[in-house]
Image (tube, rainbow, N blue to C red):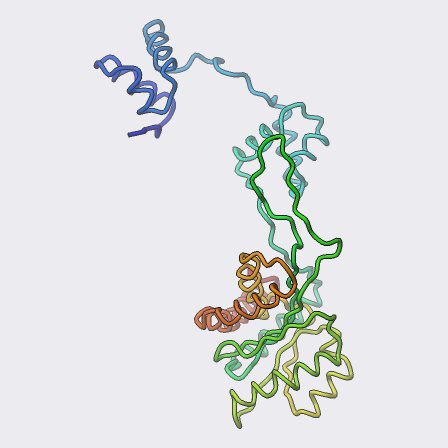
Length: 327
């Protein structure tokens, strides 16, 4: 059984003690995941110094000087978006990129994709807080959340295994194709999903509402009233769209200008995109088919949880006094 937990001094003490008790060096090397020569060296040094501690200053010297470590830590704190290669160049370091990455890890840094946060002015914050207070006691069960998103084919090259010295290429188009998606969710789950390849304009948006969303909503709610929520995209607020919704007697709930983190349907896109792209579509038709298939496969429980988060979002928005939410 491999054992390597504990400090280096504790491990040396165990190895030397067991060696004295008659355990052979080969077995100790396997047990503690060290080289057999290291076992003999530990025993030899102990017999000479009668101490389990390493001699001060022994071992490989630090690749980074104390001054370089201080400069590196300060530089990353001020420039969190910089890469190891950029750090190496900007600070004039002669150490390897791996040394830089390892030192940052020891400082507690991990490199990961940062979450986006919208920039809010004081007026935006006040508008969001006022909106949350006004809707704090709202029953959202008759509200439908609608939104659009784009899903690209071959937008980014995937990671892959390549042998040293070989070159492998990921072939893509100069302008990657995409499928635009319109979706709507409500208290009862998924309402509708529509795909289209042209850019969305007011005419197309009104067609989707008239042919797809409104009939489905009227079927779900019957004679009961329902309310539509969509963001303040120009297509949604144009005269053509506004007049169309008025003629169709569709009630629209006012929405703050900067409120992407309040709208629950925004969280739907990450689930859908991840599932679609995991199937590695090879052409635009396959991409579109996968979108519809994965939409149908989305669990109702997931949709319910996403929809119900509107209540928590409103409460959090009041608690944070209109500032950005962690969604």
